[in-house]
Length: 360
Image (cartoon, rainbow, N blue to C red; front, side, top):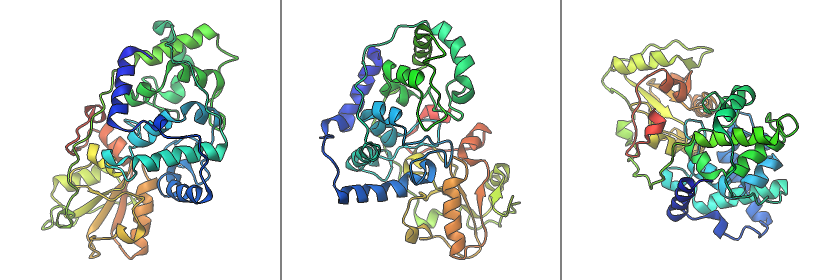
């Protein structure tokens, strides 16, 4: 890892507690395991699966892969859960970023994951790997781009150009994944098909894509008051065409906003995602919120309620399903999700924590 990234990583440790400072050798007891199981099912299972098998929504990876857990434990697991992955559906869950979890909660989660799979952490070399990034680019395009994207943006595989990921991942971590693959995932082993020099070149190319990441304590925007939930309360009702009786095209929602129609938009991602970027007028309503509170302050008078998430349906479907079970009639889900919404150039706004790389 180069000096810039080591400095960046040091800033993270100064701003937030380092999980390596906790006693991670202790075994969780029965009550702690049960508590953390419940936490996992509430916050993580929607995308990663009830049994941690992965790929239930938005290509969220398996959390049963011993090769991943043994090399990511503890710091990378902590960073990924706490701060999320930029430009992906994985958002930060730590309270300081607007999420629902404390640092202690996240430390419990990573210990629980390690204990469930009975992994032994692998202490990887911290030294940088020397390779030819230009040659690595050609090898990357041939062997990696179909899953990880030509620009490392992630398709079915991990987004490798995410600055937060690269600020935590050592060169040895990247190389270990390429050489050994990830058991229980589509990530195959390249140790037998690529020369060691070739793998070093790929690692050098991936590392060259890091443009730096500057962690800071976010200044959180205030969540909307119930009186602000309805957009254009004196406007007319919009007309939406629903695919499969539920999914609304993004351009119809944008049209309703432009025409000052009366409706409600729910952002069902973690609160940290709403803080970073959201559709104008959207109300944060995280999918993991207690079911008794999802309909809290939402009028059940026929006003249209449109939900969205990132993946693009899993979280928003779960919220809309609950509202429909309570008798809410005019409900729908933005078909494309917010990531596609942004790619389409449709309007977004941010909380006080404006992360430019998300908007770009």
